Structure formats: C-alpha cells, structure tokens
Image (cartoon, rainbow, N blue to C red):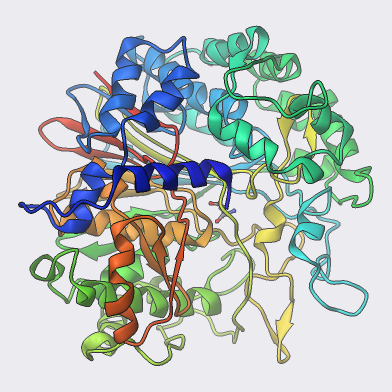
Length: 605
Ligand code: GLU
C-alpha cells in the first residue's frame, strides 16, 4: 500500500465509523462523513497559490456536498490543473480548450499518472449537434515488437516489473495527438495560449503535492535506475518533498514546441528522436519504439458503446477499451433487479452487483481486445436479449459458485482464450461541462505509477504495452489481448457519459486498473438507484468483485459487509481501493464531485 493511501485510510479511521441514523444508508452516510476536513487542508497547505474558490472546493469535498454551478464545471485530479482549465472556460473557451490546459498541467504536477508520454480515451457530447463522439488516443505496440516480447527464454511470462521498467513496455504515445484532434474539432480559442499555465508552472516551479512526494519516496529503486529520472525526482539525492518548489524547464521547452508547431513537434524531429533513443538504449531493458511508429501514430474515432440502464443510455469507449462494454454489461444485467428497493446496505445488492461484475469480467477476459486486430462480438456483448439471459443467472440467493464466459451473438467467428493481463493503479480522469453545454469525459494514463520510469524532455514514457497479455496462447488457443505489432492493448478505462432523453445527465470516470469498471458502475448505481449526489456517489466506500474475491475498502463501512458476503459464499479481502472518480451531474444546475481518495477538486461557475 502506498503511504498516500495509508494516510487516506488513517483519515478514514480518524473520522470514525459513524452509526448515524437518517435518510441515507450507513454506507452513504460514510460517503458524507468519512473524509475528515484535514484531507483538504493537507492538500491546501501545499498549494499556497490556489484561488479562494479552489480552496473552498477542497473543503467542500470533505463535507459530502457537491460543488454547484450554473454555467460550467470541471472535476479533475489536481487543483492547479483544474484552475488552469477554469481560466480557459472563463475566457470563453470550450471543454476541448480547457482539456489542453488541464492535461498539460496534470502532466507536470501529477506526472506519475498521465502526460504527453501516455495515452487516453475521450468521450465528447456536442451540444450543437446532440452527437456523442469517442476518440481513441491509446498507445500502439511498435511495429518491431513481437507477441513473445514479454516471455522469457523458457516461454514463461516475465515478472511484472521486469517488463515494466525500461524501454520494452513503451507504446507509441497518443495523448499529444489526441489533444490536438480534440482542439481541432471542438476548440474555440487559439491553440498556443492554452499551454500558458503549464509552461509558466514548469518554468517558475510548482509546489510538490503530498501524493506525488510520497509516491516518489516509495519508488526509489525503480525511479533511480535511469539518470534523467533520478535527476528530476531526486535532485539532491533525496526524494522531492511535499511543499517544495519543483521546476521542469525541459517540460516547458517541450510544451513551447508543441504550442508553436502542434503535435508534429512531438511526433517528428528532435523530441521524437530523443524519445526513440531513450527507449532503444534504456539500460538493461531496451525497447522497440521507432521514429516510424511515432510518425505513423493516428487517433481513431470509434463508435460509442452504449448500454441501456434505468431508461438511460450509459455510453463510453469501445475497444480497445473494455470499459464501456464491461460497465454496460454489469448495468445491463442489473437493470432487471430493483436495487433501489434493496438499498446500499443490503448484502443482496452487492451479491447482484458482484456476480453481474464477475459474469461481465468472464466475457471481458474471453472476448475483449483491440477490435482492429481481433474479431469480437462487439454488438452482441451488450445485446439486450443476451444480457437478459446472463441476468437470469443472478436469480439465486447465493454467490454463483463459478462463472464462465457466455456466448453472445457473433458478427465474426473465432475462438479466443482468457487472458491474464495485470493492471495497476495510476491514471487520471477529467470531467468537464462547458458553458455551451458540451460535455467531455477523458481518462488519461501512462499505465503504472511513473509508467516505464523513463523520463525524457521533461515527461515520463508510458508502460502501456504491459496491458497486453504476456502469454500469447492458452492450451493452443490464441489470447485475444496478445501483443501484436501496431495493436492497442486492452484497457479498462471507462470514460462515461450517461445520457437521458438524448442529453448528458452524468459525466464520470476513474483510474484504478481493471477495478475502474467496478468504481464507475458502483458510482452510477449510487447516483441513479440510491439517490446519492455526485460527491456522495464518488465518496461511497468501495466493494469490487472481478474474479470471485470480494474486495472491500479497508477502513470504511464496506468492511461491515464482510461477514454477510462470506455467508453468501464469497471470499472477501479488505484492501486499499484507490479510485480517483471525478463526476459532474447535469440537471437544473451542474453538480461536481471529486474523489476524496485523491487530491482533486470540482470547480464551477
Ligand atoms: N493502463 C490501465 C488501463 O488502460 C489503466 C491503469 C490505471 O488505471 O491505473 O486500463
């Protein structure tokens, strides 16, 4: 467990387990009460330069009340990034303009989670046309990479961190081109000025946050392996500390180049050459990324994947993300059960949610991967009749003894085996609604905390290729998510927009590896079925089941469900569940919620 998350848990424990009676359930009550105000204060102290609005948004998060606004709203993982986006919206910019400012600041102040060296998925609701668009800015496998890249001489999978740290895991970054594409399609302001805050902060220095400092302090061996990475995060030999000012002139120069010349300044020329050299010469673990991979990179527009739930359409990113399909399957199966009547405290609710999730994860393992490389029953997986059949499996009283993938209707035929990709929590989620009513939901990542640990030109390179299955086949049957040149690794990122009567009702997403799917599904249920506001919905203690074991969030009231869930036949495991949900509810007003487990805020006007 990280010390950042330990301190979150400590705060939860400090806040106490409250047996408050009232209209909210015990779990929901904790969502209101669990986070002591000091969580906001600790972060606030390290952001002296924050505006009064941002400081008050930090404090609000601890109360369980959403931030309310009329015109626009941003929810994201770091107050400095949110403020940069807020300036853009105040100046009349669109959500796409604000995104450029927010992502470039996040890449500086939350470098462990996302940045220029990574990839992202974006869901956009266009108020003028009423249309939803999804853009795939996922990393690609280099053309020279082979399916066996993550197997050792004996054909056995490499140890996870042996694969992650160094050049081997680095895929072609997609984020710079995705920002440019979003701005080209939906931007209202000029491109270059959108980089101003990030460039200024990188040049003058920003205040290191408690979370960044503790994550650096916990990872000295891996971060210390490469000279450039070591020099940035351990400038005097010791790890950077919370409250210190950290400058990143190389990042400022990279941003200046992209601001002046567009994303091509990243994919061609000196920056590209340095990226390739860093990957191909990584000591001990060189990789395959080449200038050709960079120059060929394309953002792909894909059809949104939507599933029906409670009269809404829950829409998000299709393959190569498994996010919208798996969230959609879970909700689609649950649509036949009355979770409102059961409520958040009833173990029966969690049996239904947990087993729906296990069934969906069984399909995910069998079928979901980059659809450009692997035939898959894309429509069949969220077909209502198919999901009704899967939903019938939930009719018993106890945990399902075992789950297996179903047989959704196919557009193609191909037998695929389950895979075993490992995903670890880092990543960041940005939700924005602008004054024109456009809505943006983007989850952005460099995969593992600090990605491959390779640092070049002021930013970290991703390790996204370890989201592929390390094995290529099982019992002679190919694994859908095996590595192939040019392919995009399967993701769990679930940037989501819930649509009601053709308009956005909820904009949401989270980091958290493959638990993202559970976090997002749970928060949607909390909001739609259990009537929680967005702040309560994102603060709700987590219960997540992917493969049979029920994960309960340590130090929260979720633990009180351990015995009842065991009695239903589940193995339970109490652990840190480090989501980073950022959500906006769209109604008469806009309401924003930011995950108390991270440092972010919601801010609106
Ligand atoms: N790389 C993971 C994915 O794309 C996300 C990792 C995380 O959330 O920490 O699914």
